[in-house]
Image 1: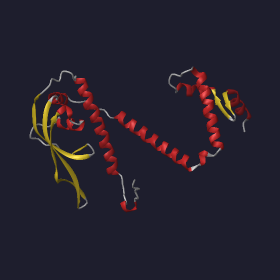
Image 2 (image 1 turned 30 degrees about the vertical axis):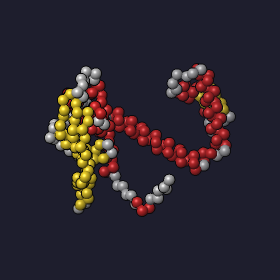
Image 3 (image 1 turned 90 degrees about the vertical axis):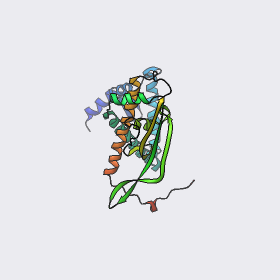
Image 4 (image 1 turned 180 degrees about the horizontal axis):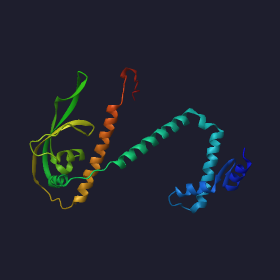
Length: 235
């Protein structure tokens, strides 16, 4: 062992908890990562010492070698990976609503809309998936535009009475919307600014793009589910 290196390490430490040495640079890095500290750095140092003592005691009891701890660590690692991936993907997604979308949204505010919502399934024939419309899967909806779920509101923006949408992946299913009628305005839209409408549309579109990306990941993956081998405990 290089004694000069060891001496430098010992010389640089500012906190020692049994055999654990914390250098000035390590402490400064940890302090910089903390929000405004109640009680200042002195309280943080005390909490850091307590934390280290607890870690050392847990290791002495070999808790870090127990299976529940390993599972918890694995789960934390995987959740952290997923969170970082999702955050990074969402930051990469941008969307700017068109003036047509904003005008269409504003024009529908306060109006009663009537449309049919048809659930679509898939049929596997000759190794190719096809959209099929099942029987008794259409519902007619008649309500104020403002009262509709956001996916329905956004989906109606591009439709005129008598027009149908394509297959939409919304609200946990696959649907086709046919707009039947748009009633006269029942209330003013003065309380909603174009900026607020743009924000509503943007956030929905960004989430929609994210879901489409997720669907593509699923389509490209090779997934097998053997339902007979899956045991689900009933409550």
